[in-house]
Image 1 (cartoon, rainbow, N blue to C red):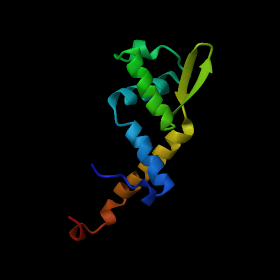
Image 2: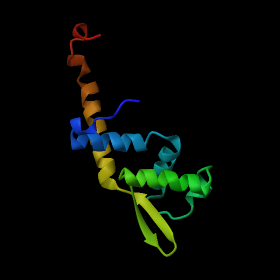
Image 3: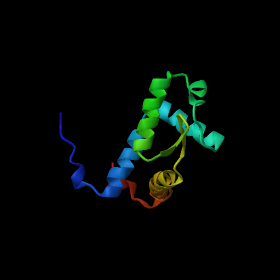
Image 4: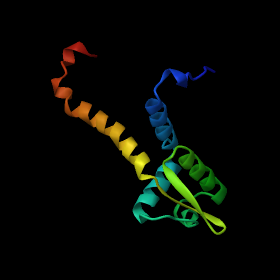
Length: 114
């Protein structure tokens, strides 16, 4: 298996890749969608919303938190999670760059590219 040479890429490129890697699982997309829908911190109700076992959901939450997409705060004996707006802004900034390319694709000479 090849070694990833992340040091050859910028910090922004590595962070963006980590954000998208964390979003690369449907359960994590469902978690993000739920957090956006409720628009507040949630503690234990994800098990009622997503058809997975609590330990599995906890692992997905851990991955989302490591990528910086969500924040977690301890409240009593539970951890409450919410969206990190800065991470979503970075993600949308990257997507915005792609949208800009698509919007300008008519200016690209299609004969010069496959």
